[in-house]
Image 1 (cartoon, helix red, strand yellow):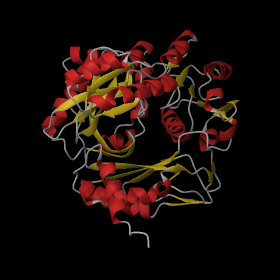
Image 2 (cartoon, one colour):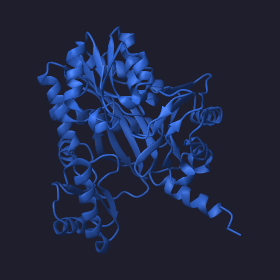
Image 3 (cartoon, helix red, strand yellow):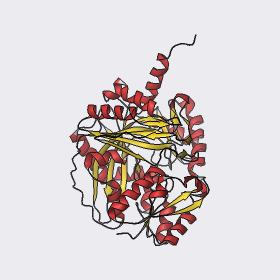
Image 4 (cartoon, helix red, strand yellow):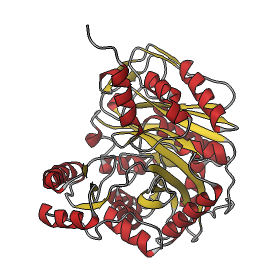
Length: 455
């Protein structure tokens, strides 16, 4: 096992890794920016090092400073968390060259799955269903339009190196395609330094269902069931649940087996997520793979009983996976992402001083957070400030428990998404499990139509 782990991240995920390391008896060191001196991950780590000013490019994305921090403190492994450098193949390579274990997959695996076109090829070869689309990256609008016409509109234009909804556009006709293609290309170049795009068929009214996988260095891979992440705003997930209300035990076995075949094809090591789109007919198609621990991993933890971060660390250390091949999901879990945003004003970021912070408690309630009363939410990073995770014996009880927990979650001094999440949980379509990735778009239209007309 590792002698000391450096955590190259911040916020709640840094605290989450600290807890896992403590249970494994591993000392931790965290890096932090000047803006995060008062964050809880700095307080609870065994050691901490300031690596730069608030801007992420000068701190959390500064690879030389992170490597230097590991060498100074004697760390022998680095956990990247999610975001920042978690899916950066160059960082993984530099860790290896510096005799540091990167707690995650290999650089080659990150590249192979990070390139969406290469990932599609890999999954196709492994017999995993893939959404109809182009086999190669498209560099110019004219050839892309020809490919789109062959696939049939509507289509999705997507960045080959993309993620987080960037470099992505929906084209519903040939007349609008070229303009949207050029916009996506510019956005992809700015976000990823790579303007390569591909085109795939747009599946209307599909669910976003992902399979949690784990692999070890000895060639074994397992899946831990699915999460339904269909409640999204602009491709950003807001509510996740496990199991999916649309997935039967038979479909779970099929999707899980497909995901395992895909990761076995590349000898994947560590925690990862194979993401699918599930249509209304029950057919599923590979979307992409995230080669890291996910924000929503806790819902899988509470329905399986496994600590995914500990399993991730043990796999990186060379231990054998001791998980069963056929894992049973117990009960139902829901996660609500609580962001420092004003949902009534276009989800505008709401940084600032938290004057009161009172998280809910009780049976089946878990809160993962790094904030507290008196904490100042900085304006430099992602707006996620807490994750509310609830568990109950069935979905209806889980929804009721989540609704009550949100009602008892007190955060004052800034605006948060709690009121919006309450409205989503109250929506009859959500309660019925009748949702897809465009649910929130329809929900917003319904809300606007119900607002009283101005006098």
